[in-house]
Image (cartoon, rainbow, N blue to C red; front, top):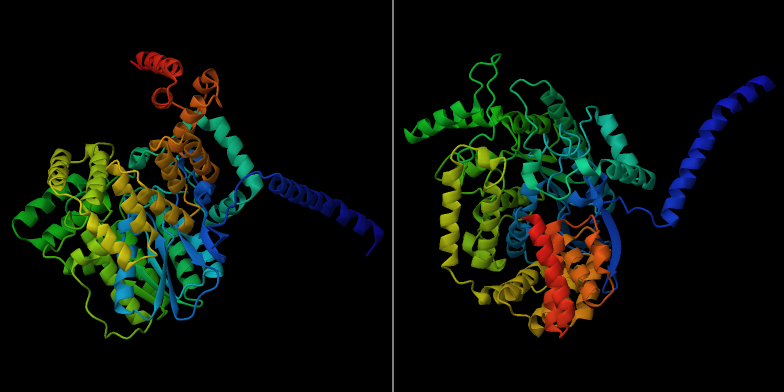
Length: 608
């Protein structure tokens, strides 16, 4: 090669190499100086000397602002698999997680069903689902799970968030990116420390326009899709491509169960109806009314048709619609792979009920299941697991739903918390704009009134713990029950310490340990645990307020500097001051308490 050509080639390549070197140097420097957080879904830690993978609490920081980070169910799964162990990984969104309380999602019931049926097999069920994500986010979780966890079986139950989750047409998360290649590139960039730095700068500049706290579905109530809107097509296409890639990854070494998505069509009217003159009969609410009339007259088939049309034409797409479910089915069929097992879940659930159209018998609201719905979901998956893993099908039949409520300690206490959360949701957008919303609210209020008449049975918690001594979630719910009765005894402390040993990465447990010590007036220990919770997750609002109140009491924070903190709203500041005043008074610091109470009163007057 002539010298002039070499010089010319070097002149082209040198800037590229220098750029790559500077990028690598910056990335390395940011990591060395501790900037940013790990971006992988699985992290490693040791518990009782055993290496385990655990959930990265910051994982969704690649897609959400720091204040909106959503987290998976806390878990620890051994790096080294024991013999005679079956690993099952579940992938999905809030419905697969078990929202509004993952303690009673279908994965928890499924685990009991399998353990009872096959006591000689150890089942490790890993639920990777996270609220508000979609297939764009689930895909990289599946890839990492295949590399690190190597499940025997993948369960895919996703589809409700394709139009509102990351990279869909909404402005709260990652923006609308049409091409899958660009979506993957954006995720890769956001996984680097440089990407995190750029995102942080971006959040700082746009902070006033980004939501400062999680407000659920209300945050997405402005993102409408008119019937026939062509922007929907790319979302369907991306979903199909993501699902196909997920199935190929899963079946490289394992089996996959892919389910279509069941949603509440009978007792969840359309969130928004937009009539389009280009499309005949495109009014979602009209179809819903026709469905109600048809069902009342006993014409189930006609009712099902109109309910499904109302779902498909709903302009606020918070539920998987018919086209998306058809895409799930066709993707599984077109793969032509016997290791991909398809379940038509809406049909299976309909066959399990007297009413052929899924409604409030199994749903809490639009897509989230009540305990009975999760029980039916677990039952369907359990049957398919037995078939696709070739397990002997001579096990005892699945027991009545009440048995699983007792095994998981689902008492009136948990029932009350779940339905009060549902009531709160129904009072906000988009539910508040639905037809029959007032009737739905009255129904839930009546349900709550009935729950209040039932006394939670403490013996159920003891029974559940005896049946599953290693189940930290049952112990956690038992501790919550005791603390709700204002019991902060050594029993509670022992429970919380056991739970903390099982899931030390869970900031909520550290927070409750802080609450325990605060109730027992051991304030320095309380502050230590609140700060531990914030070390794990700095965006934990209740831990922030509690720690700030205690720092005021001990003089570790200056009152005027606390009042200037932008991270606290006026309401939060008032709560901090009231707690600081109460704790000061209880410890004989009356003058200090008066100062905090006076300032809280001033803030209250400003608010009014």
